[in-house]
Length: 206
Image (cartoon, rainbow, N blue to C red; front, side, top):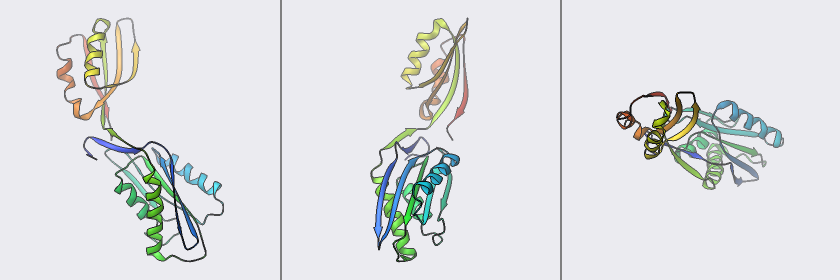
């Protein structure tokens, strides 16, 4: 992934499994955008798996600046959350939660065995995931007279802009749209020949 222009996400929930000496590790890869939603998923896993001894996890949120967290949930330090997070990094993903539910099989696996188990379960789930690469975008608002509608739409289409919303008034139209950061710098020059419009940058992916 080119961190300056794009990011990678999973499109849907997938599951993985790893077994070792009677212990069972159930991994869940979940597209997720914030800590509040991630915590809800983790609480749900405890409700759905009352016989589990641990729910360990890692997450990463953000598009160019990241919020990361890992949890060993009582396993030896570094034996669970770190190898789970390592798979997020290995697959170059963001806006993702990976939770691994462990059922104890009666035999201690040691730190090395646990690291391998949490890594393998996470990788099994990620191997099944559909991964999508998305471009980082800048966000704009443009206001223009109705007679410029055709010209404006043609320019936005040429830059593969995504229209987010459109509002109409008695005198004209206001569009909110997103465009790839790679093409964003071209917009002022694109619209320069057109008069009676106002282009304003309103945000950028972080």
